Image 1 (cartoon, rainbow, N blue to C red):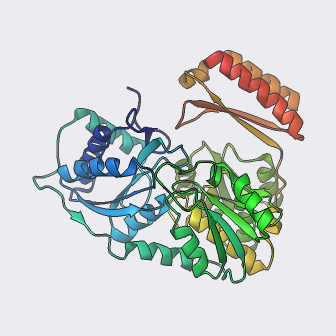
Image 2 (cartoon, one colour; image 1 turned 60 degrees about the horizontal axis):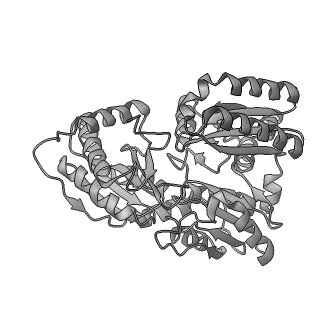
Image 3 (cartoon, rainbow, N blue to C red; image 1 turned 90 degrees about the horizontal axis):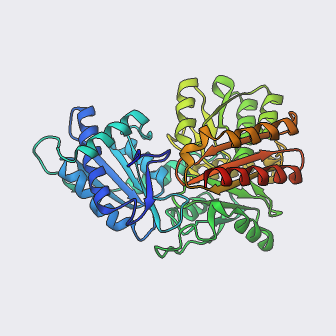
Length: 442
C-alpha cells in the first residue's frame, strides 16, 4: 500500500480504495494524533457533500473519532470551506467527506486543524503511522455527539460581510454542481441583492459533478448567453472553487479572477508584500499582467494547500489556482468558491463594470491541458523519452510559450499542459506529448 494521503486528503472509489473500515481507522488515528498534539480532548466538526457514500463513510468515521475519546459535531451537508470556517468559529478540528470535483462513485476524507488550515504533510504522515498501528485511544472516555447550533448561519453571515458592494440588480446564474453548495450558494447571493437562477441544484446522491459545475464551465456559460444574465458562477462538488462566465458566455478562469483581484488590491494599497501566489499551471498571460503591474509572483506546485503554505511564508494575502481555488487570506484559511464569487462579483458592482471588463485585465494565452490515463504515474520522473520530448517542444516554442508535464496528485493521470501564441500550435504539441506519455507509462 502506498501513501494514503494525496494532495487533498485520502481519495478513492467507495467500496474499493475507500471503505467504511478505512474511514473508521482514519477517524480513530486522527483523533489520537491530534489530541496528543494538543495535549487535551478535541472536538471534530464533520461535514460532507451530497454523494450517496457520504452517510456510511460519515457513520464509520465518526465512530472512529468517538472511540478515541474525541467529541463530534455533525454539520451535515456543507461546503469544504464552511467546515474550515467552523473549525475556527467553534475551536474544533475539522473533517470533510468529499470527492470534490471527482465523479459520484469516488469520495475522500480530508482534515483541518483547529485554526482552519489543512494539515501539513508531516502531520498526515503521523496520522497514517497511527492508522497502520491500528490500536490506541486518547484517555479513557468515549466521545459524545454534539449539535451544530447556529454555526451554519454564522458561515453565511461571514460570507455576506466579505462583499465589497451589494449585488442589487445583478442577474446571476449559479451552477451548484448538484453538490454541497446547492442551498447556500443561491442563498448568500440573494442576501446580497442579486436575482439568482440556480441550476444543477437538485442532488440525488449520484449526480454530483455530472456534466455540470466547475469541470464543465461551458454549461453555465451557455446558460448565461441564452438567458441574458449578467454573469454565471460554476462551483465544484465541495464548493472550494468557482469559475465564471460573462454576459457574452465567455468562461472566466481562476487566473483571470486572481489577476483582477490582485490588480485591484495593488491599486488600493492593500496587496501586502506586493506578492501574489499561484501555481505552476498559471497562464503565461497572468505572469505578464503581474509583471506589467510590478507585482511579484511566486509559483508553487499544484494544490491550494501549497499555495496557502507559501502565502503564510511570504506574507501574501492573495493566492490561487487557475482551476478556481482562490484564497483571500484576510477572510479564509482555504480556497472558498462562495467567497470567491462574492469578492469577484462585488468588485465589479463596486466599480460599476461588467465581469468581462474585470477579466480583461489579463490576456489569456491559448493553453491546452490533456489528462493522460496511465498505469504508472510514479515512473514519470525517470521517463527519459518523455522529458526528451518536452525539451524538444520547448525548443520549438523558443520562449513564446510554455510546457508543463506533471503527475496528478489525486488520480492515475499525467497532465500535459502547453501554452503557445496560437491554439493550433499548443494543441499540436500537447497531442504529441500526450501520445509519448501514454506510450511510455501505459
